[in-house]
Length: 401
Ligand code: AMP
Image 1 (cartoon, protein in one colour):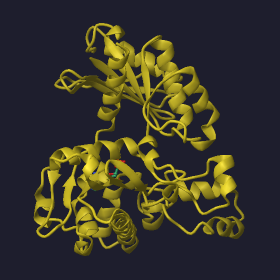
Image 2 (image 1 turned 180 degrees about the vertical axis):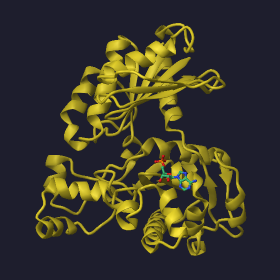
Image 3 (image 1 turned 45 degrees about the vertical axis):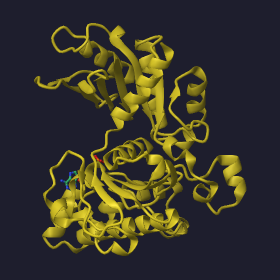
């Protein structure tokens, strides 16, 4: 069976076509500069990449082009769009309503439209991506896979903010958590690698990338995660501040005489690694500056390490132990020094990493990094959110047959 996975951003649309019988990606690519020009990169394993500037007025144009390329006599990998059994869409926010991947219906679309305020950045492009697929592939089964869904098992004690309760009742102001598809994928994978059932394990998954979150999973269920109402809670990230005293907000508004929207921009776009280092939001560039002696760059990295340790330690306490800890995403998978710093002096909470193995393990594959005397097993596991989405879409396609 063939599954198309679509991840629509405001000016981009990424796609992957999976052959699920062979468990492999047969084509993938990215439409960029949608609405502001347009270009596409289309890749097929073992063949030359195709790249072209093509006018893409909107997501509709982008999906039409993707389908044209996938079925093209020369560049394509399938004879017609009929070969696609289902389409899986990454949708960031499912709110309280959607706690698992769900068949896309008019009702779900109405819910997404009505709840744009929960996720003003990501919801509109996701809606556009789905609408474009509905138009270009009418009748094709489609599934929405939500970043928030995996975290829906949290108890109120983990998701309620200590604010006046009516804000939760009236505005659904609560913690949701994000990156759920990634946390779900790597937690499943670590159980497999440990030869255990996730339902019998206590796992901490560290998704450290441009956006970062850490999740505690006990007996297969998320009990806590570091992101909250928005993806700007928890760890300091590329440009997001993560945890701060909330009273900083009115202080900045008064002191700088700026609006709520301006504070929002500061907290989301000008903070984190970029804000502290003044160098870059990109961890590699901040690392390079720190190596050259830039003190603020070193401090920015130390803030990330410090917060990660605090969150991991608190999750061990919350679960009364941990069997496995996983590092994933751009920083988690590649930055060996950062992994070593996070795991250093954590033996009191049962975590010891083998620094030699960590320093020499191959990139791009799952690898065990557990050190001597560690109670928890330590792993690096490349994440694959698209494959997870494809698996959910496959399940749906099979259930409809
Ligand atoms: P992601 O959001 O998962 O794509 O991760 C992006 C982040 O991963 C950026 O901050 C990159 O600098 C970081 N990253 C990628 N490769 C490396 C590397 N070799 N060392 C350190 N950070 C890296």
